[in-house]
Amino acid sequence: MYLGLALAPWMVMYALSTLAMNHRALFTATYGSGPVPFAIEREMTYDGVFPEGADVKRVSSQILASLGLDGAHNASQRNDGTIVINRNDLISPRRVTFTPSTRRLVVERLTFRPNAFLERFHRRRGYATGYSLDTTWAVTVDLAIAGMIFWALSGLWMWWEMKVTRGLGAAALLAGAGLFALFLLMI
Image: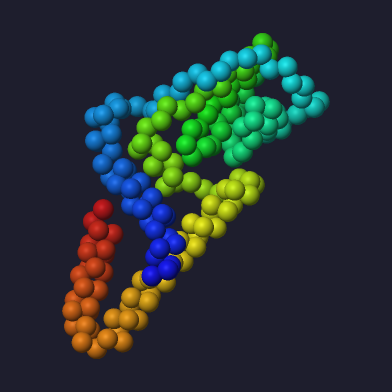
């Protein structure tokens, strides 16, 4: 019971996010198709100085730190030298575009949409980012997974120990395994 109470937020989040992914057409009808748009949050001239020969990773980290947006991100450099930084954030992801030739910096925030938010929640990853908060999130998700495995195994054990439920439990187990196998083979 206590494990269930502790893991309730994760179970609700995974249930809602999966529901949003399964019913994508409903959100498309509401918001339209295509990617979620960005809205300009601010534009400025960036006067920071980068170390000699700094790579894109170093430049993007410095820009984000100076904007107060330090955190998990990825960055790429276009052929014209423009650096595009995608700052991963659960609630409001941002795209930061820096043009070195003009020192122009544009910060855009992803428009909030419930389905996109829930999908980001569902797909959140943490171990590879190097940020402790992301790693902590990944550990809690691993604990939720361990809890689900424990629930399944303890349910099997309780079913086996309660002799009066063996017949009905066996039918439920076979039905679930059969349905799972059917989906696995047919999809």
